[in-house]
Length: 431
Image (cartoon, rainbow, N blue to C red; front, side, top):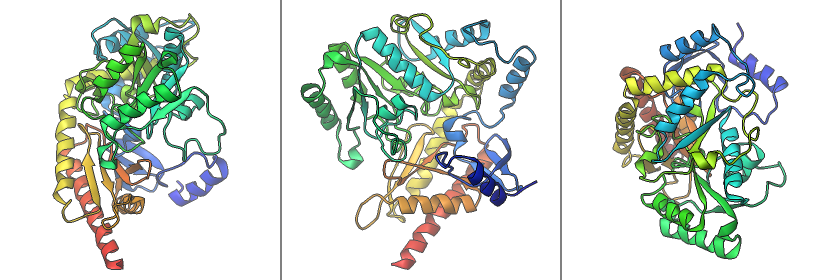
């Protein structure tokens, strides 16, 4: 068995540097919310593969479902020889996705692919080409995904011209001086200055921005967007790729806004670690594409489909939506409890168990990615895996499996608080 340092050297020699890595520990095995590396070191996982294993690493029901499918077949390509589990999962999602209307679903492989197909469907259904997205949003690393994403580095830098007819408006973040009214005014200005709304096929946004910093769509904003979309015949796309599957306290975050999107993209937590993504939307909209216009060789892979059925069962049987609320409240209370003692904590936020802490310099008020990265590094030394995010890189997001055991969750909170306090103390000593 080799060690992490040796593997890192081999990685640098064998893998393109464009594949960024948040840590330099190499996994050997994982169980629920714990990971052991190739050196035998144990870590508490507060990343969950970026909100993928919401039901934990190797949940027994997910593993058993995949094993059963392995005994039947692993691939036929649904477009060549279809299979019933694909149909059954589509039926389940059509019922579960928010919206009181007939729905249909298509399965693909990745979140970016789901977004690409949602844009294709929107353009086919409306006969229009323009798309509006928001600053700070993240929608994937394909070319259309990059065009929609509202963050240049590292996602767009060096890749040349983006696909045209994509427009951005400011995302409403009160903490950073952008109100709902200002964001809506920017959208109205866009329609007067840059693109006729009659040319706009869709508006796409995340109910909670993921890579952008875990900023939740403010109350009332979706209602205003829905009205605007209905007025101009524009489709509303909810990117639920990171918010989906009990992460925010409901199966999908849109349930909390009282507004239904025309199209919903999902991936990540859908299949508990197996590559599967989907687009679910209004039946008449989904049917706009011609036969053969949607799909893909691996889209709706049988193993991912089997895993997704198990994930949906686990979420319901183990009340993970309620569990998400309990864990998120405990985490936010712990962080709020030290906020007065650590003035670098600018905000603690997030619905359910999709939470974040934002750091700013206590004197200048400017974003402090240095503090966030120092906390992340200190926590990793103590055995806790954290992720940063945000346009300025000054936010730590928390994405532990929702199935994490209470004692391990408590251990993680102790490490987190200690790490924040130690970084603050070290900074105070240097002044």
